[in-house]
Image (spheres, rainbow, N blue to C red):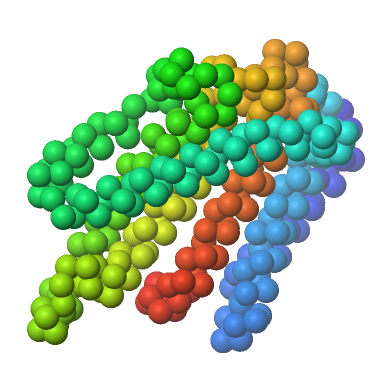
Length: 287
């Protein structure tokens, strides 16, 4: 046991905690200062967490097969960039993005049909709640048998996972417009499609983007889990399951880190697009 490393890690953690406590209590009307604080706080928290992780694993001499230190994970990342990039392309670019676009697009289109048909609204939405509760581990093997071992079967799992969140949120959003606004559109003799594009879809935009953000994380989880049930010798899920069997835990953590970064970046991109396109909404203006 190295008590010096443990003490340094704890001191750094407590120091970062104290700085963050002081920063979050700063009251300012300057938007630049406020945004800088909002950036520094999570960054400092993350760095302190890595230092604590490194110090405790090194100080207590934790075996790498149980929990490798961050420095060892970083070393694995830098040594395995070609493998990680191939896995990223297979899982994220092919499976996640394709399934995400198809699932969200189909969910949005069906939501418009549901809005036009009371029969679909009463018959399809309850079915959607049932299908959305299906476990991935039950659906993924079926999709592999239907679409093969390559990325289309994983994209199919992503479609199933992202379709109904988009459907339900869009239908709810289309009903968010107020009755006064709808009466005003009828006063102007606006038809269904004019009301849809000029009133109801803008009112539904926060709901739609909420579904897009939820699906950005669900899609990655679904694709990785689906790769556990059959895939070519490439992909994040394949690499995780294989390297766990070989007790190469540092490579597993490298894949997890890459998945976390990719998922966070994807979510952040959708959130940025939301702030750009719905800047007029009160929830965005308050932020």
